[in-house]
Picture 1 (cartoon, rainbow, N blue to C red):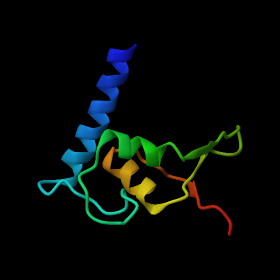
Picture 2: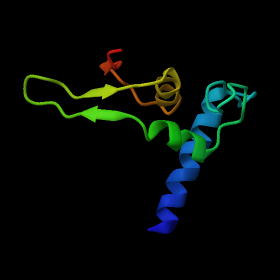
Picture 3: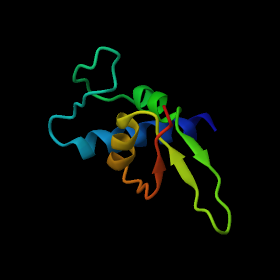
Length: 89
């Protein structure tokens, strides 16, 4: 199980870096908002705060995104989010 988890961790990091192109850095992952090279730990930290509202026959599931970096990471991973909801302020 540990080997499988490490494999998934590395594949997520690799996919994001490849999707970013040759520069392989992005803004929004660090607390000071500087450009950094994404690591698996940073990616999973930001995606760990996503919330999924389970749908039903009439309502589709909704991913609640709290930060723009989460949507960007999902796009880099090739995950199509068709319906999102930003929290009410």
